[in-house]
Length: 384
Image 1 (tube, one colour):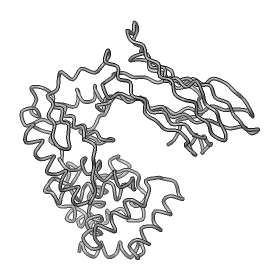
Image 2 (cartoon, helix red, strand yellow):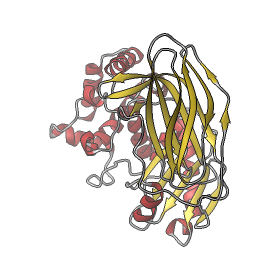
Image 3 (cartoon, helix red, strand yellow):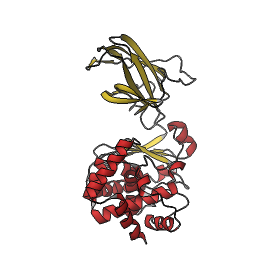
Image 4 (cartoon, one colour):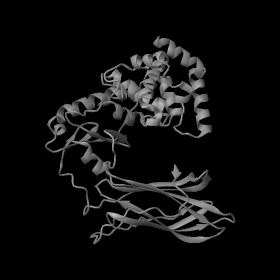
């Protein structure tokens, strides 16, 4: 987790909701570590708008330290959220109050403030929150200011809680959507040999304008935690398996994009969905697209793709990287089996840290008992 900048205070939105009707204060028991004692912790929630987290902190040692604080104000239902990092410097044995602002633009019945505390260490131009010693979610339960769900029709299934905008195409097709998502959920779980016990919240918006206004997200869809948010209309109907695969596979670990996105692309094709996440390659099989890119010398070297932390940005060359990652995952699953893939997914970490990336490669080569260049040659030869 990168704490954004060296500033001890965050930039505040220009608005603030006045005449707030409710008040809320939540006390937390003191936190005691070898370095810090943190007491009088107060979430300080007063309502939508600007709120202030406060605490009294004492450095217990004879050395200077930097306390890192990460606050995430999550309104629930994948509404627009705020996450901000703070760093507070402490001289030896210094005791003082810290204060950090956070914002809720909207509130739902699932809103919470997540607090993370740790020792902050300087890393280039940023503070890195390391040696984390505290993490907890504090739910708001503010019924006065709750987000209005009256615009949505709700449907419960075994594994999903589905919200469709009223008078929209998704509401009209809600039963078909529910059936398809449940079927995909079961097949993905069976393939990964894992379970996901929480319900996935699936939110459908009729167009980009409404979705962006409510969530702050500008794409057609995303998966985050146990939420999936998508646009659903006559011209946009996303692959029903891709985001579900991310959520279920997330129970195993958080690997580099090669395995994370690669599995979602692979399983989407295996279940009959349109696996390619690019308008330039509709309905093409991942191996066909990858073979074409290989023939045209457009493939990303596997050693480079292995280091990607995401696929989707322009910098990631997503039109090439998506099918390539899916093709490689398809190859190693079909040739070496799901057990080794699961072990890899659980063992490697998604980070741009050079030590983590080197360890990822070593772990992969140990699991498959083959070097990365050698498995790359086997995979590419299978495409010819």
